[in-house]
View 1 (cartoon, helix red, strand yellow):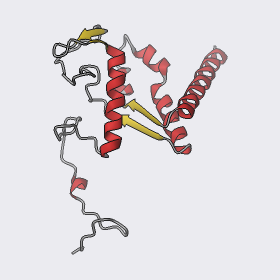
View 2 (view 1 turned 90 degrees about the horizontal axis):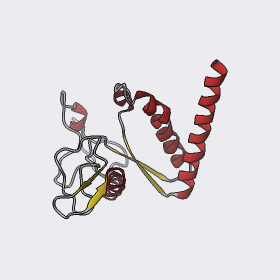
View 3 (view 1 turned 180 degrees about the horizontal axis):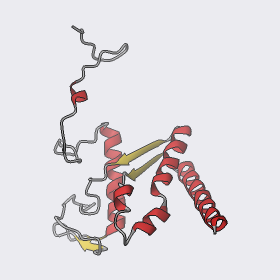
Amino acid sequence: MARVHEKIANVRKDFLHKLSRKLVNENQVIITENLAVKNMVKNHNLAKAISDASWSEFTTMLSYKAGNDGKIYQEIDRFFPSSKTCSVCLNRIRELPLDVRSWQCQNCGTKHDRDVNAAINIRDEGLRILALGTSATANGRDVRPKVGRKNSVSKAVPNEVGSPIRHAVG
């Protein structure tokens, strides 16, 4: 039984290596969604399928292979509403249950496949982040909700050699 499990693991890892290599070879920029796999596995109905997909291992492979080849690997925050936003007019709907696989935008009337629409939005958001160099949304707020205590590092003052802004310490 252990040999069978080892063979399955080796076949999966081989597939992930081949697919990640193919994607890195064919693209200059790779954009993925930063999924909370650990939290997703808590759903007992989906846990086996999510674990079998090896998303975390796949994104790790994409990241290091892209870095080694001088390509760009960008992750989109998991809280970005990629499925709920119309990729044509950027109208966002309030609710979209997981069982709804297609929907029509009430603003522009475009019919969307949930996964294709999300992929377009993830691509566009990743390119926007790369162009602007920030993960803030268009209205100036972060996508990730602020929870917990404030980070004191955000008030740090740059004082490095070669830094464009140098401040006197003291």
